[in-house]
Length: 429
Image (cartoon, rainbow, N blue to C red; front, side, top):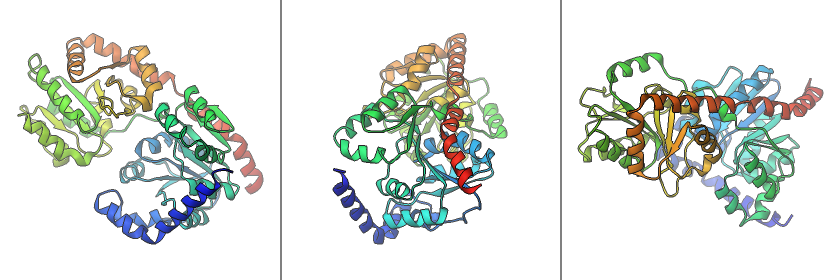
């Protein structure tokens, strides 16, 4: 193919990284991006033995992709298969450790270095490989393909922004997509974009995230915080990024003119930013408590910074009014609104939700979500919903009913994979 020289160049460059991988990973560890106890897994030094029997390898980039795979993981383990789930981030490993079912295990994905990839495949010897969404690593794809293993892109998505970028390198993306036996797309739009870039076989099966269980929460923690909050009005700014927290604090100060007891909960997308976010609130003269420091929500607390990992399910249960972040930034893209919608929350969001445009379109059409253009519009939308409990309940109910009605991707994906399972039984019994 035309791109063979490019792949050869990539392979050579990535091979050269191998000797420097320990230093690179150590540097990442110092920045909190690697787990010191399991850093060997990033160089394909396995942390566990391969279980006997058939094994499916499922890979997702980070928290969102890994959690979306859980319904499929549960279906595969129910069929008696072993399942290996790989991700690349510390936060995803922490959360998946608590949520994977029996028969499934987690490893960090190795760096895309040829000898690491070969060592990983030699150890785990998967019978089928399922990559999630748009996770494309050239050496991994080539190694799996060269071994003749079934390779499927599940829950596949390709945003319009990514599509435009890949159009500048059409031969590169065509060669990677050509490695897949089939691409199982989230939507018709994703399917069309994948086919335009060279995917040979594409089928629309829906979004696995609609099938995922709501994020869990410790019942005692919910009761404890609910008791501290009492009857105060409360809203949550969830998965926020730098720049959005200050808009939330400005909205809070505007709203306290009408709701003097208002509590604003801010859950930054990256929990490590908790001190920074708390400092921003204090600079505005707001009284702040931080979850990571174990500080209680006392009567005078105006802002509660939810700077812990894996607890969004807790905060979604404290209110039915949620703003979902990474959507008021010029280079946003949005965060996933499905989890709060599943828990019966009305959704507010900014205009930049390209990464989840189909989901937001469905929620908006049903009246379960509302777009705001900027901070002042956010404050006005919050005021309207906080002052009209009936409207808030109606919007929250519409959000929950919408995501419930969009489920079923897991069964459709399982049906599409059935020929591969049959072939495994023929070959391995």
